[in-house]
Amino acid sequence: MFYRPNIDDHGLPHNPFKAIVSPRPIGWISTVDAQGRANLAPYSFFNAVTDNPPMVMFASTGAKPDQSYAKDSVANIRATGEFVVNIVSLELKDLMNSSSGALAAGSDEFEHAGITKADCNIVKAPRVAASPASLECKLFKIIDLPGENNVMVLGEVVGVHLDDTVIVNGIFDVTRYTPLARLGYKDYTSVTDVFALNRPA
Figure 1 (spheres, one colour):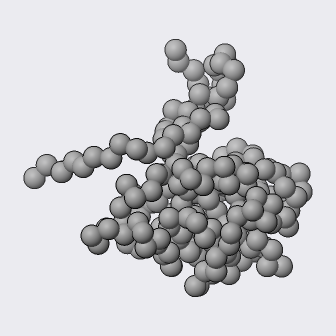
Figure 2 (figure 1 turned 90 degrees about the vertical axis):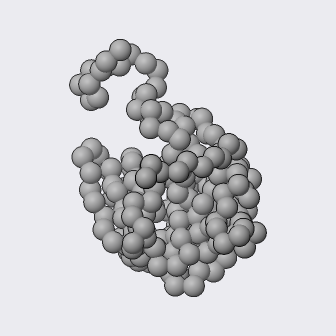
C-alpha cells in the first residue's frame, strides 16, 4: 500500500507512522515550573543527537487544555531553561506509564505516581532516583515544527548520573539493566538480546 500523509486516507484504524520508526528510546523528562513545582512525563520522540558536546532532543506533540503552548514539559523548559532526561528500564515501566496521565498544570507526577526523587547537581529539576542514568540538560533551542503544537527541544547535557551497578569494567553496561523502548500504539519492547559488531577497516 502507499499513502501520502495528511493528504490520503490510509484507511487503517490507527496512524501507522507511529509504529514504523521503532523501537524508540523513551525520554522521561523531568522539569520544574517557574514556581519550582516538579513535572515528569515520558516522550517517545526522543534521542541523543551528538556526543561532543553531548546533546539530546525530544519532541512534544499535541496540546493541553490548560497550556497555551505545547505541554507542561515544554512550558517549564521555556520558563527555566533546564530539564533532566531519565532513562527508563523495564522495571520502571509501570511508574513511567503512571506519569503519562494528563494532570493539571502544576501537578507533581512524582508524587502522583509514587516515584522517588533525587536532587540534581546543576539543574533545579529533580531526577528519578531509580533510573539507571539521568542527564542534566541546559536548553539549547526550542524549534516550532509544522503542525499544531509540534515542538522540538534540544538540550546540552551538562551533568550525568550513572547507577554504579551498571558500570562494569569501565563501560556503561546496558546488559546490567533492561532498557525499555516504544514500538508504537500501546506497544513497547524490552532489550534482552545484545550483540557487538566491529566496523569494517
